[in-house]
Image (cartoon, rainbow, N blue to C red; front, side, top):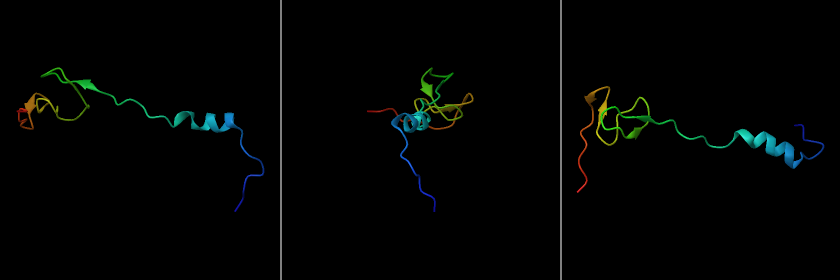
Length: 61
């Protein structure tokens, strides 16, 4: 199995790792309650998806 002959510099290692960072999640606005939610999923606040109530949400006591 081949092994590297020389060590990689810190700049080269950093350039390779430049794309490893986490990205922000894309959020959309719920048309019913205007809260931020993940796209293509039912709203966790009101339970609506595509204008219909999909999930019944219980109010916190």
